[in-house]
Length: 405
Image 1 (cartoon, rainbow, N blue to C red):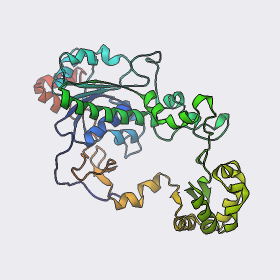
Image 2: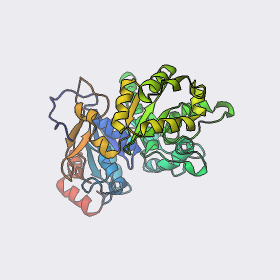
Image 3: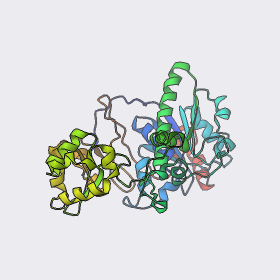
Image 4: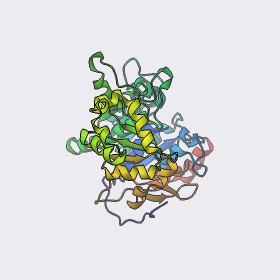
């Protein structure tokens, strides 16, 4: 499965020389900073002594490590620090003195109580970029509400568009879509703040809200329902307004995903895929809106036509007709995906559990190779980092014995 190990010729990366300090847990902030690390940034992850980022304990699915953690934490250095301890302030100041970016997604108001708000830091570190990630943003009536991914999917209206029709039909996204959207906007906002600092010499404050990130992604269904209009209906894995567009069963028990966009494709679908050319002119199906209205009748005809064919035979006909199609892959299918293998998108990264496969970040560049370094063990770099800040071995041992690190 792993196509290549990682021995690139060392070209300069976009964020080489940039240092990011992160008070992060779960997904949104770690996903942001991991992507900064992919581009060459040095990311110092500050974690609680003994427990660390609680995502380390979500599961043990990856040779004993947690699936979320392996995904979002490669290429980082782990420093354990009790941020409430007396000495923590000096240690954080020492780290931030040479840092370019501080990212945090602690509970609302926690960073400010620790003296780590943009206002408190800007006076001493005018070039520092501070990115705060929270559920609802740093003001407004929802500011202090707890915000887990599913809560934001619900508040942002995402759940109203996914799943099956009816009260009990709602379904959440199968991955942390609200966290991921916030992490992506944090990542791009930090990059834009670094560009701005090149021009102004001054760091800026970024306030990322999970709600606003996911609502941005919900803009099409929102505009579709503009002015009190009917919102898109829940349609399972089918398209709410275009038909046929969705999964259909083949005769071998597999499903095939397919989608038609126009009348030319409908004609080809009837002739080449269904082998029913006369159907193309059937009044019930003569336009997309009619096909969508009469989808139950059309579905029955399609299922009958596919019942003697394997999924691969259906896909072969769809390819011949130049109609969009896809395999309905499970996770094992994605691990073995021939396209990812052909493009050598898998490399191996070191972890405390041994070498593990990791997907190269999207956006292949001819200018540099992404940083694909180890997933850190908890506190793995504490002594080294404190040594860089001038702490003696004795002092580091003392801090450890008192639970500060």
